[in-house]
Amino acid sequence: MPTAHPVCRVSELTPGARKLIEIGGRSIGVFRLSDGRYFALRNRCPHRGAPLCEGRTMGLVTADKPYQLLRQREGEILRCPWHGWEFDVTTGRSVFMPEEVRVKSYPVDVQLSPETTVEKFNVTEAEGMVVLWTD
Image 1 (cartoon, rainbow, N blue to C red):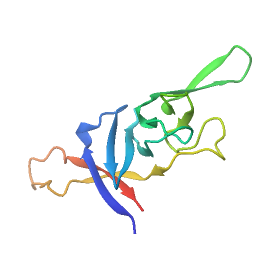
Image 2 (image 1 turned 90 degrees about the vertical axis):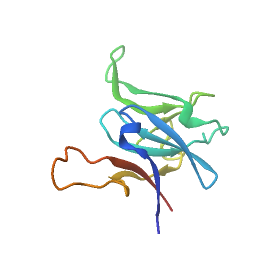
Image 3 (image 1 turned 90 degrees about the horizontal axis):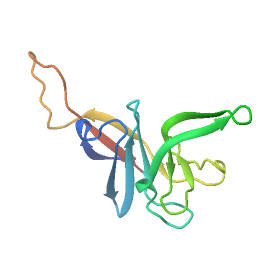
Image 4 (image 1 turned 180 degrees about the horizontal axis):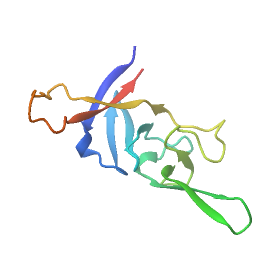
């Protein structure tokens, strides 16, 4: 049965930001993309064990024709800080060999904080918590 691990308040993880946490001796990076979606990856590159989630996020460069480069999926590609291996933040799969090289990914969602109390009147916003799920 999956276990919930509260990470932080939603307001503490702004769009485009990440937070490194440790759960059960594993370092995990929790990402909030610019469109508001949340993802989590193990903070260990499969190549040489680098702290992957400390790397730079960027877009995916594609080309339909020579010399016509397109940047897509901005902020969804994570580059390893040691050797430049690139991984898809949304799946954990590598950009260069997605069927063979990957990083462990974890489901993340937003839930109401257990300490949040909601009044029946004059409530404008409920503060949520980012929650990471592990097996």
